[in-house]
Figure 1: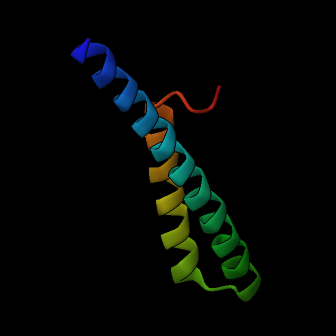
Figure 2 (figure 1 turned 90 degrees about the vertical axis):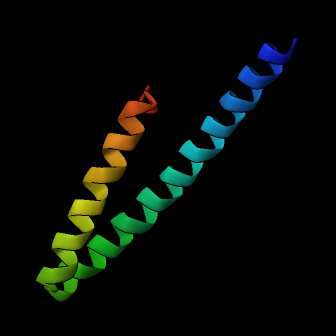
Length: 65
């Protein structure tokens, strides 16, 4: 029974983590959009790097299904 509860908690945690990553993804896309409009090369580079990190994390959770 403890194993079932543990698995359920883990699944719920992963769902919440994925939701958080998706919110962060939206925010970072908006930041990138603003940086592109302002031609802020430093922020563009920073946003692209963070978007790549978020993508890899979501891919690890198979969240793109």
